[in-house]
Image (spheres, rainbow, N blue to C red):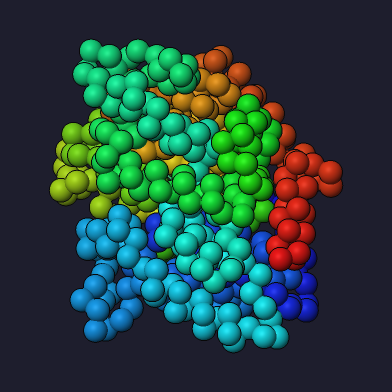
Length: 455
Ligand code: UDX
């Protein structure tokens, strides 16, 4: 991370941002908000009470809670995803609440006019509200260009029958997207174009195309081959800005980040520690949990493993873990300052679920990956990193101790690992260069600021 932008003293334009209420979406939106703040804009964040950001970490922003905050509304203070999802994620029942709030903000902003609304791509209902108020809407797409291209091709993949193929076809290549196997497409988590999740993705794609422009958390040199396709499929403004290159996500973390392991980490030799984390949502069952632990022990490599509360379905059965686990060569924590760990010289590789933030944070720090995707965009990004860019290896068969320890040793110990790490280092350098004056990310950031200023 670096190139911290300068604070601009005088502010006369406001931007309203509305993140989707999950850690993997809140982080990039608040990084973007901070970047725009440093470029001189005032910031208002709309948020839900469900997974509300830590407001005290952003005294310079204005926060307004919407959607789930009316006491008379039976959906008041929904704190569980199962309660929140039907109304707000699938039905997107929030147009009136959003319109009311935006009308107030637009009317009160005479000295500091509102330039635009920036919402997560998944908040598709916001496009028609913005249109009705003549307010330009930009979309923040928190996933890769590649996975978004696949998502926008779901109707085509459905027509080809991919979602109904049986287990005999899992290892076959997807003809339209040769990087992918059938099992990757099935792991997106839909079985037909009519599934609620498929409809959500379809609406997301449609309303993204109707927006004024897309801000991608990526950089040109990382997804060069996809950019042309995106410009064709989404013929609006496209800005590619690798947010983790500018800022960390510590302030937007919903869980407290443990730092007590740093004295141990600091003592390890360079490139010797495997960092293991599977993001903020993914869960494993007890058997998989035990296989992960055995795989780590068998690999004989030092590790730092994030076991988030709730990561193991049922209970965290510590008695099933190998004797003496984790021992002196391992540390287990509930939540870590991930970017700092990735930037640490002792970190030799990242065993990840291939969530896009984790992937990009790893790329930005030049860390090789071991990919164990769960669902959604993760299998698509895992293939891109391992198959196309070859900065990681893909664990093909879920969580099995032998395959796990082999993959870890391939990356951490074998000659192959040196080559993978070298490619990761070169990719990080490309990202660094893209931030410099005249570089692709720098130019994208400048055009975004110019565009918003022109509104
Ligand atoms: C989800 C989806 O899984 C992902 O595929 C999608 O692209 C975005 O939303 P999540 O599963 O949480 O996100 O993964 P990821 O995108 O990697 O985001 C996790 C974030 O939590 C990262 O920014 C990471 O730095 C942070 N994190 C993770 C911590 O701060 N500490 C930790 O210990 C682990």
